Amino acid sequence: SSERGRNERPTMPDAPSLPPGRGLPYSPYERASLIAKLTFSFVGDLLDRGRERTLVDDDLDQLATRDAAKKVTDDLYDAWTHESQVAHPDRPSLGRALVLSNTNFWPFIISGIFALMESTTRVSQPVVMGFLVQWLADGGAKENGYGEGILWASVLIIIGFAQAIIHHQLYFFTMRMGWNCKVAAKGLIQRKLLRLA
Image 1 (spheres, rainbow, N blue to C red):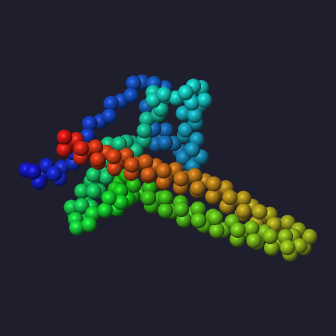
Image 2: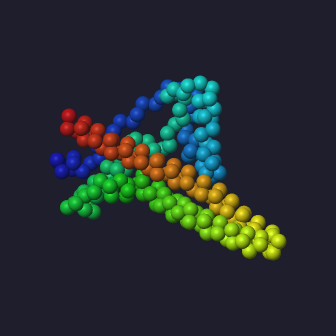
Image 3: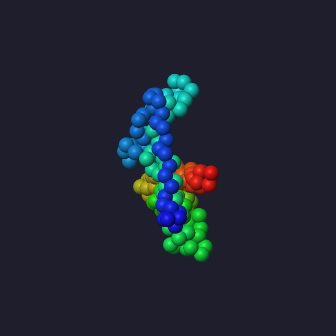
C-alpha cells in the first residue's frame, strides 16, 4: 500500500479562475496563425490595453494550456518518476527529466533547430558580403552589369531579415522553456512539502 501510494502522482487542485475582466478567456497564442506567431502580433490586444491604462491581473489573457502550472508540474513529475525508477535509478538526473518531459522535449528540439538556423545566417552574411565586395572590386556595374550586384545585395537583405525572425523565435522558445522548467521544479518542491506536512 505504501509502495502504491509513493508511485501515484499527487493531485494538485486546479487554480481558481480569475474574475471576469478585459482579458481574453483563451490564449491568443494557441489561436494565432503562423504569421501572427512569427511576428508576435498575437499580443497586439494586450499591448493596446496596456497603452490605455496600467494593466492589472484581470486584463491578462488566459495562459496557454501547455504553460499551465499543473500541466508542467505533472509532466515533470512523470518524467522524474520515469528517470528515477525506470531509466536511471542508480543516477537520476533532474536536468535530463526536465528536457525529456512532455512540456519541454519538442520546444528543446525546435530551439536547437532555430539555433542552428541562426548560426547559419550569422556565418552566411559575411560570406555573401564577400561576394558583393568582390563584385564591386571587379568593377561592379561598369564591367559586369547590375545583375550580380543586385543578386548579392538581395540575398544579404533576405538573410538579415531571416536572422531577425529566427533570433526572436529562438529567444521566445528558450525563455518559454526556461519559465516552464522553473514553474515545474517549484511545483514539485511544493508538492513534496505538502506531502511531508
